[in-house]
Length: 496
Length: 85
Image 1 (cartoon, chains in turn green, cyan):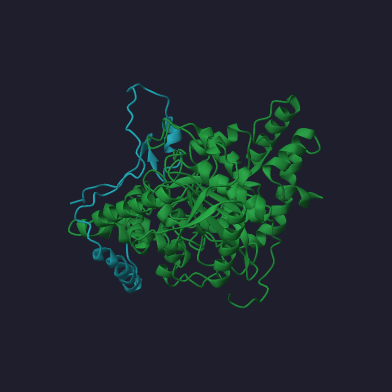
Image 2: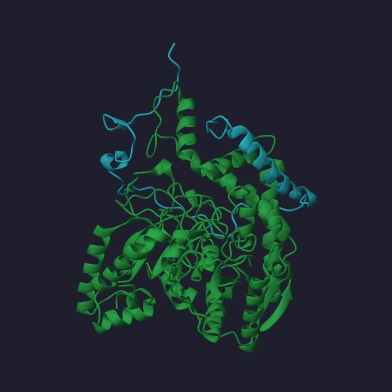
C-alpha cells in the first residue's frame, strides 16, 4: 500500500489529499519508509529533516481540512545541499562546511514552503555543485536507482535519484552547466533549468554566479511547470532576478506542437561520443513530435566545439572568486594552528576542499591572473558572445531546439574519475544553455540498454512556456511517464 | 599561491598532468578570431536597480556568530595579519 504513495505526481497526490483519502502525514510516512528501505543502497540523501516534516505536514493537514490548501500543500520535497534552509545543516557537499547551519532560508525554498511543500531532507551532490556524477561529494557517492553500480549524473544527482527512486515527489537542484538536466536524463525523470534570472539565487551557495540557476525535478512536465511557477519572480534580495511575471512560464503550455518549428542542431545531433542507443531514442522522439504536427528544421550552432573550453574558463574563474570566502573565519572548517595567516588559509582549504574543487580553484585563479587574463578569461567571455549569437541565429529559424540531454546513458561509478576532461564532456550538450542563459528541460525519452535516455528541449530566453509546451506534447504523445525505479544491483549488462 | 590552497606531497604532479590536459583543450579558443567581438559578462539584460538606503532587519550578533569556528567577545576571531617579531 505505502509504495503506491511513493510513485505519485503532485496532481495525483493533491487529489488524494483534498479528497481526504490520505493525510500529508500518511504521505510523509510512506516516503520515510521508502527512504529507510531504498536509501541505504541509493544514498540520495545526506540528511533527513524530521522536525521540519513533522511541523510542515501538520500545517498542511490543518489547511487541507480547512479547505484553504496551497498548491503544494503536503507535497514531499527534497532539497539539494547547496540551498540554505534555516537551521538545517547545509554543506554544499563539502567537508569545509560540515556543521554549517544557515541563519536564513533562501528565496526559492522559502516560496515553496509558503506554497505548502513538506521538506523530507537534504540531497547529496558533487562538492559545490562541481561535477557530473555526484562522485565528487565530500561525503559519499550516490547510486543510480536504475543500476546501483552506475552514477546518477550530477551535480544534482541526489535530487534526481530521490525522485527516480520514489523518495520524494519533487526535488530542487541547481544547474550551472547541466547539473539539473543531465542527472534528470540519467535517472529517467523530468529536470528543468530556467532562464538565468527567472529564479532568485538568494540563499544558493554560489558556484559560478553568471551561470547558476535553481530548478525543479519532477515526475511530469506539469509538476515541473507548477513548481517553477511557484518559485519564480523578482526578489529584492537578488539583483539579477527578473521582474517578469512568474506565471508567464505556464502561458499556453498545453497547446501542443502543431505548427511549431523544432530545430535540430547538427553539431548536437552528431556530437562526438554520442551512443547509438541514445541517438535512436532521439530519432524516435523526433518522429513522435513530427507526427504531432511539429516541423523539424535543421539548424547550426557552429561554435559548439568551443563551448566546453569557454565554460571551463568562465566557471572555474567565477568559482575561484566565490570560494575565496571559505577562509575558516566566519564559518566552516578552520585550521588554526598554522604559523601565519597565509598558512592558515592554505591548510584550511587544502583540508576542506576535495580534489575537483581544488582543481577548479587553481584553474580559475590561473585564468584570472594578470598576464593570462586576456588570453583566457577575456577570450572566453568573447567566445561566450559567439555562442549566444549562435543560439540567437538558430531561434530565428525555430521556436525551440531539441537534442539528447547527455551523449551517453549513466556510466559505471569510477569510470571517469581519473580523467577530468572525459567527465567535463558529459555536459557538452547542456552547458551552451547556461552560457547563453536559456531555459531548458530534460524529459524521459525511452531507454538504451535498459538505462534512461533524456530528451533536451531548449528555448529562447524567457521561453520557459515554449520549453514546457514541447516537453508536454512529447510526454503526452509518447506516454513516456517518469517511472519509479526499484533499486537493484547491476544486471550484468554489456557496455552499450 | 593565488588559490591559497596548500599542496601536499604528490599534489603537484597530480594536478600538473591533469591541468595541462585541460589547458590543452582550452587552447582551441585561440583558433577563433575574436578581435571585434565584445565580451559577455552578464547574459540576460536586466537593468540595475537601486533601492532606498534604509536600515532593514538583519541577523543578530549571536546568529551571525553561530557558525564561526572561533568567536571572542562577540567578534569573529581572525588570524593575526602581522608576524610576531
